[in-house]
Amino acid sequence: MDRRTYLALSGAGLGTIGGYVGWNRLRYPTVPDGMTVDTLSLSRNVLESDERQVLAAREERHTVIETEAAARTEIRAIESATDFVAATTFEEAFLIVVQNGMRSDAALELQSVGRTDDGLDLQITVDNPLLPDHDDLTTHSLLVRVTDEKWRVPGDIAVAIEGYR
Image (cartoon, rainbow, N blue to C red):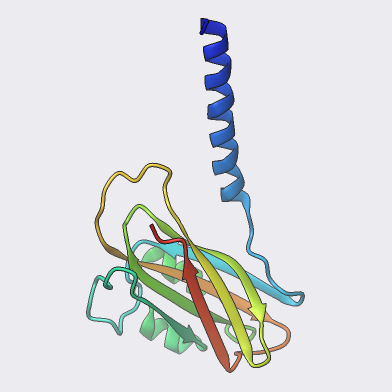
């Protein structure tokens, strides 16, 4: 293969990979009409009520926080998390803290929020790096701020996390 063909194919391959990565970073979660969501993903345990620093591999849980007082008690004093909580108007919104145990170089990403008859259904994916560089275990936390015209706080919240490697 001559040099020009090689360089052209290499450039096209890198452009495709870069476009894929860029597209994934610009996606927004799908939400129903009348609802807005904001998210913050952290590679650490943000809940004060849990003595453990690390959840087991693929262990999942979620916690609903309805009031500012509960948020001050439950969320650890981590600057980005406390800033996220401070930007929440609890008279109009609530927080869902989704957590799991997985490799530290992955991240949780909200894909969609759907309404059910009595609550919400959150679909979350694991955003894995293209080339994992290590295999360690840490707790990941995804803070989701939900403002919904239909419910102040719904009765049932289901969370599904997919995309583990």
